[in-house]
Each structure stands twice: as C-alpha cells, then as structure tokens.
Length: 147
Picture 1: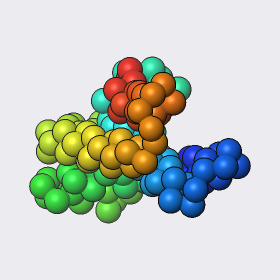
Picture 2: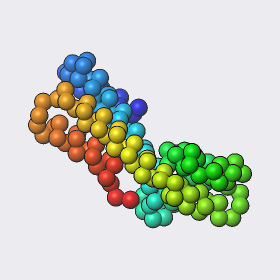
Picture 3: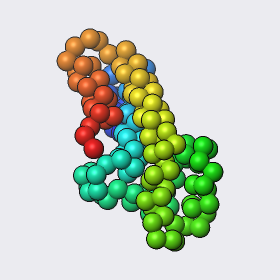
C-alpha cells in the first residue's frame, strides 16, 4: 500500500489526471506485492543472511508466506510440522525442504511475475519514454534481484 500510495500521490502532485494517478496506484500496488512475494521466496532459497535475514526466519516466526501456503496444499507432512509450532529440532529445515520439494518457490515466482505483468500493463497510460521505461525496469528488478 505504501508503494501504491507513493506512486499515485507523486503522479497527482505532478499534475497528472485521476486516471493516471489510479494507473500508477495499480502499478505500485502490483510492484509491492511482487516485491513481497520475492522476499518470501528469498526466505526459502537465499543463502543464510544474504538478504539481511537468515534463511527460514519467516518460517521461524510462524509466517505463512505464499511458498509455504502453496506447499501446504501439496505436502501433507507440512501441516503437522506447522501445527506443532516448529518445536522439534530440525523443524525449520524440514519445512524449508518440504517447501522447496513442493514447487512452492516456482509457484510463488510465477505469481510474482504475474503481478509484475499487471504493474507493467498499468504503465500503458504513460507516454513512451525514459520515465515509463525506468518504472518498467524497477518492476522487473523487483523480481530479479539477487538472492
């Protein structure tokens, strides 16, 4: 929501129409969701600490991110581990392994790319040129940043 409101507010403060403001709100909202999904993927696949937090930190906190939610629909053993609140030694590692094996990362990556497509489509209200290209590059970077 923060990114969405910043994009809309910036457009309106620059004198853009309400239609353009709404389109940039849509861009920012989709960008923000894609960025968050990508962060959730990093929690499952990044080398510990490479993105500023240890791998599995969201899982340790009990956060059911998109890769985990997808894995819950395909890995029956995962629900039992989560229901016991990860109290056994090795539970976090087991959850990470099950999420990776379930295709949860690929699923989440696909959804993040879907949101980027929405963000890029919203830019159609802007004239072709450097500002539009830059916003499109920011969107693509959100899902392709290193982990």
